[in-house]
Amino acid sequence: MSIDVNNESGTEVDEQAILDVARYALTRMRIHPLSELSVIVVDEAAMEQLHIQWMDLPGPTDVMSFPMDELRPPVKDDEEPPQGLLGDIVLCPEVAKKQGEEAPTQHTMDEELQLLTVHGVLHLLGYDHEVPDERAEMFGLQAAIVDGWRSEQGLTGPSPAPTLS
Image 1 (cartoon, rainbow, N blue to C red):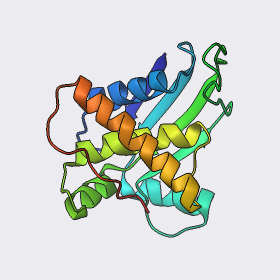
Image 2 (image 1 turned 60 degrees about the horizontal axis):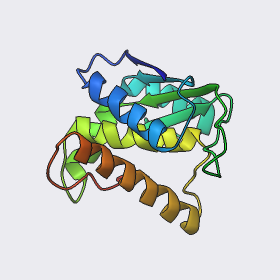
Image 3 (image 1 turned 135 degrees about the vertical axis):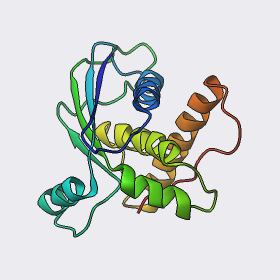
Image 4 (image 1 turned 90 degrees about the vertical axis):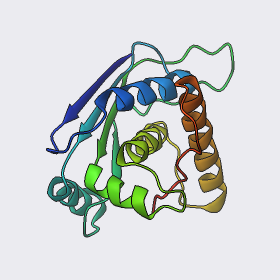
């Protein structure tokens, strides 16, 4: 799996953890090992620009996903997953830091960025949270992936709860 992490934010982030959790999520979702993903970390000004341009919403947001080949996880166990270019995930550490501090189970900026990375991967794979049933499915899957990754890493304590708007 080819995953590039490019930090343009000026904020120090755990790029290796972002890479690792993205790879774990894609493997768990059975995405073809030759697929490609790009993760870009930007500051609030750049994120606000993207948020206005693509969502017509003011202010910076935490994560945005830009799918390319619209890959989907295989439905059947014996189904061969297609390979391709997943797309881009854009993260904002400044917003992640605020969300982590304000969450019911306070957590670090890096923990929030890990959660947001999984959230972005799921969006690239076609998951959404606009209606209650979809929200429950996506956030349940997100929690299972983050919990599985944290367990595999030997991390203890509760996983960050979703703080996404």
